[in-house]
Image 1 (cartoon, rainbow, N blue to C red):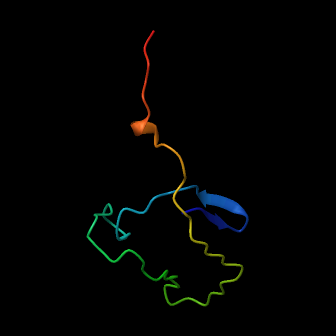
Image 2 (spheres, helix red, strand yellow):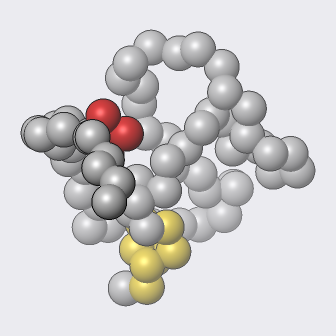
Image 3 (cartoon, rainbow, N blue to C red):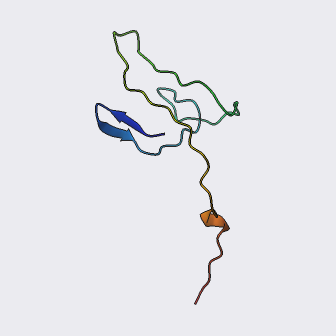
Length: 72
């Protein structure tokens, strides 16, 4: 995921590995392939605007770990 906040990149191609609890590292738990995106407000007055969501398709071609490496 890439996130901009007030025009500043705060997450750049970051992969979420699970829940994002406040005081613990995320732990992976099996989940459905697609889930909703939820925005928090912490019970404060807040407005959200200019939110774009787009599905990313898998990249085509060979993966780096699948490529053959030649020495010499």
